[in-house]
Length: 210
Image (tube, rainbow, N blue to C red; front, side):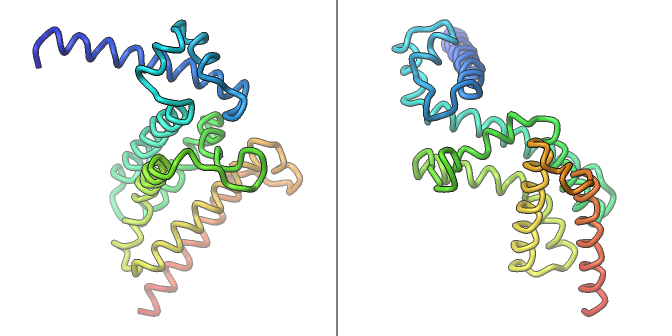
C-alpha cells in the first residue's frame, strides 16, 4: 500500500475509533432509542456529516461497538481455553473467562442486551447486522462447544449444553450487576462454579455410560 494511502487509512481508523468511543458514552447515557447521530457527532467533536461518512446510522455505530466488544470476548475465551493442558480444563476455563469478561465489563453486558430495549419484545439492528453479531457471539462461545465435542459429546448435545451455559451465565450476570443476587444469599461466581461442577459430573456420567 502506498505511504499516502496507508496514512489516510490510519487517519480513518483513528476517526472511527474516536466516533465509537464517543458513541459508547452517548448510548450509555441516552440509550439506543434516544441517542442521535447529532449527539454522537457533538461528543466526538465532528459534524453530523463527518459521522455519516463512516457510519450510515446510529444502529451501524451500535453494531460496530458490539462487534468490537464480542471480538474482545472471543479473544478472552479462546486464550483461556488454549492455555489449558486438557479438554476438561479448557471447557471450564473458557466458561469462567466468559463470565469474568462480563463481570469486569458491565457496560459490555449492557451492549449485548440491546435486543430487549423497551421491554421483552426483541428489536434488532437490522437482519444482516444481527446475523453478523450472532455469529460473533457464537464464536466467543465456540471454545466451550469445541471442548465438549473433543470430550465425545455429540453435536446436538454440545449445542444444547453451550446454550444452557449461555443462559445460566447471562442470568447470573444480570442478577450480579442489578444487585438482585443478594436476594438468594449467594454469590454469582459461587453459583456459576456449582453449575460447572454439575456439568462436569454429567460429563463423567456420559463417559461412564459410553
